[in-house]
Image (cartoon, rainbow, N blue to C red; front, top):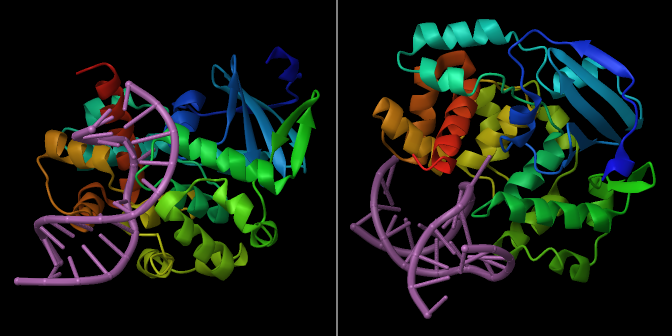
Length: 287
DNA sequence: CGCCAGGACAGCC
DNA sequence: GGCTGTCCTGGC
């Protein structure tokens, strides 16, 4: 995939800790290309080509222009991570090991419409399968950007999704998730999420859970990864296990979400991602 | 073949 | 409110 390479034009000096690879690969977004040190992220009407060099983020934007602050927002570079980590260490005993292990991970800020569909697709599914469904959808949608003769597909806008045929939707092989997807693209468009952004956590959560296929976990994911709610606390099987093993806390998904928010406070979302990354990495190493 | 993968939901108590 | 069975699909 070397033919994809271009020279990166822009540079952002980042306050450490920051780890681009952890940030991209920790399950917040699914559609990215990775070759060598570089990552290619479809983002709205652009493709961001990015790599990390020490404390610098190097990037170029293909397609629609993005400003430096857009890039900062997307990768969570505006978060005061030292303050967040200090807050968590000071508040929760026993989190330091987890935090050190996951250091550099940032919460991204992604488009909510796409994020909602991504996590509806994620229900009872492995990451490769989620990615495959989303890539198929992007290809069907058709909008793309060529980078050195390679075609990178953008995520389709709501008006495009509404025009899809039943045969095209069937090719996604969504199974029981198909009715959730059909309902969502029929009932919602991007503007819905703009109306939500000024609501508080509780009100946002309530509105999101009215979407069919959006339960406790998916609603928290949408708020955390695309609506700036750093106190959101998605509970999946990894976090469930982590809460029990590391903090001795058990309960239902709803109960664990509430407990996580109590224990970790304003930055429960960061604690959740640190714990998630920690648990998954330990599992991969066979511990 | 069986089992499960980064859940949601209805039906039941 | 909590608990249980069920849901498509792909991969091992």
